[in-house]
Amino acid sequence: MSRIRGVLLIVITMLTAVQAAPASAENSVVVHTDISYARAEPEGSRGHLLDLYVPDGRHGKPRPLLIVMGGSAWLGDDGKAYAAQLAPHFTAAGYVVAGVSTRSSSQAQFPAQVHDVKAAIRWLRVHARTYGIDRTRLAVLGDSSGGWTATMAGVTGGMPGLEGNVGLTGASSTVQAVVDLYGPTDLLQMDAHMLPGACEAFNTIAGTTDCHNDIASPESRLVGCAVQHCPQRTQAANPIRYIAPDDPPVLIAHGQRDMLVPHHQSELLYAALKRACVPTTFYSVPGVGHSKDIVSPDTPQADVRSTTGCRGIAPQRNRPTLETIEAFLDTALGVRPGEPAGVGQRPDGP
Image: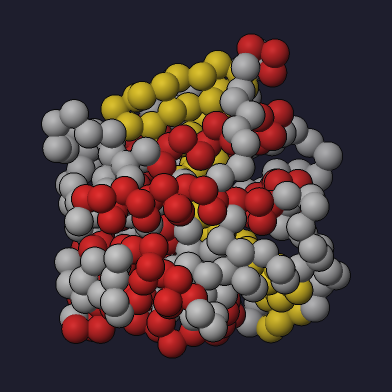
């Protein structure tokens, strides 16, 4: 079974990999690695660590924060590594970037991963002044299972039942913007919307026989049972269950050729957010699979859906590039057009 987990994690890593471009002194960025936002559990694990990429702070203005989590099908506890690929762009744009790791499903089952990301958010808010962070401007971004984690953090802000008691408590774990790159949103509807041949390929990779409903699938490992056999427990892990009108703005991007997380998962998320009148933009990218390259400027033009209030609008075709994501975050976090992200911040919040 451990061999199967290892093979699946390797395949997912290969499917989602994009070359890293770590921040360096050339960009006047200070990098703090392996900060413990909570005590390691189990001992020696990496799921309660974060990395921080802090731009040169000589101007003295607190900056907005982008929290990043990479996907691993919940099989890894090193999600903070993804931040190294995004930090050069966003620190140059004036953001502090945090890479956050949460526990794997073999170390702890749901809702532990939600408890972890909320603990990291609370830690970052409490220590905001130390690292020049504007604690009122926090955004989360993740891909695949990291996208699920980011979305869960965004739509469960202020819910006592999902706060947990990991790490520092008492501070707010709310965020002000969410970027979800092809994350699962309704685990009970995944198999019905897989692309032709995708379940067979998934079974070969994962050593399963019943696609995502197999007890050995990543989703079933997350909740501790075959997802269709414990629907109530599984529904508790579905981000769309928690969506409410006061949720922060959301940007979604999903490849139409995704063989692991069906494109339909993001369609469900967009529809639920639209019904709740949450400002949302959905980039549906043709020809792209389950890959971090979805943010590349070389990807095809996306079919874009967006909402304002409770009504859909038809924005021009575009790509979900890092520049596009930056523009979304600037708007969602109240950064003024043409102004560096660390300027004109609101006073520190709770």
